[in-house]
Length: 238
Image (tube, rainbow, N blue to C red; front, side):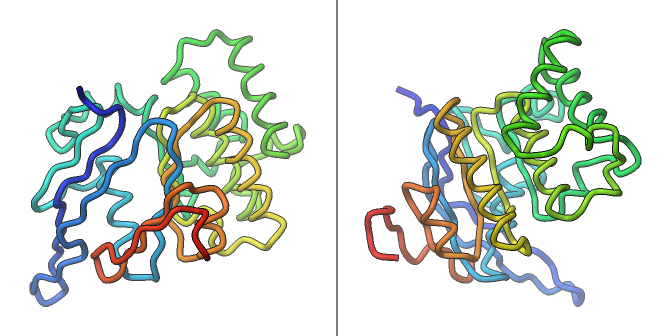
């Protein structure tokens, strides 16, 4: 029986430095991430966390090993397949500007995703946006504000709102609380906790912060220099 979710099997990733010398970022990484499961990848800067995120959502491909989702090898997916799967697999990155159109309004950025990736009609799209604005504690007056006028924390929450709007099954979160103050961090984590309870979306949280990792994740994988060195469940000591 095929597992519903991701299976990462002996994945390695190597880049070339500025002198065209190879350096390995991930080395024989292996883990599973099942439907409805929240896990965290914990590690310092340079440990390979963000590279892993890019591999999981198809931005890059591994040099060796396989990554399967619901039994399908995602490294073999064409761009047309990825477009179809985007409604199931979403990601939010620390730099939210990369996924948002800074010149367009908050409303346009979210409505565009709903129009392209769901079958909701105009009224349903408006209701979905209103619902998520409330969930993420974003004031409705921001809907007509250009994204470039938002604060960094507001852009991060908007990027999260946009990803959640299409009801994804799996969501990769790469340092989504990094650089935020305590109140903004708590607001983001509360959104994730509430959404998981209501819709069962599975999260893979990539972070350098141990407390954040254990707050919303049932399983924590520690990554050091491209190798998993520890796996823990949330009931273990932080």
